[in-house]
Image 1 (cartoon, rainbow, N blue to C red):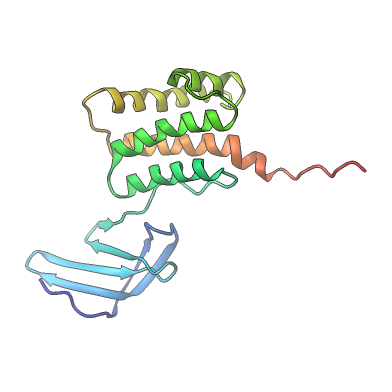
Image 2 (image 1 turned 90 degrees about the vertical axis):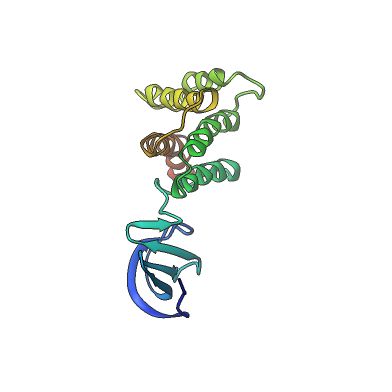
Length: 187
């Protein structure tokens, strides 16, 4: 299999697995072999390469959405979980979502060194879990425990559910409060 030189190629639209932008590119490299064609597109936004062969894209588009107002460490963990799914590492994503719960709890005032369930209870007792949200926060905990303590691989459905639940929790705790205009200071 030989890769053809950098050149104009058939345009292709995709969500970049690096910068999360919906882009279309017509620059890159392609190859033909006895088993098909593959193309490496270069994102016009971030200049990173994406390999596409049929329906397979590497790195894949990451699920979930960017959440505003996050502290850097929380943002890094959330992005790590999303990127893990983008490369097919679903068990790693589930484990990272579990760790994210602990970091969120400590970030909003829970003491360090607690049992994991105590972090989940702290979030619920202090009002950081929305009404009816305890069920999905507990689902993150249970799936995370399953990935941690049992010999089982997590599925794409598991990891994508946990990213959705984590995103909603992060929006509830960080993004929505950060969007409320600050009250003017009293003179």
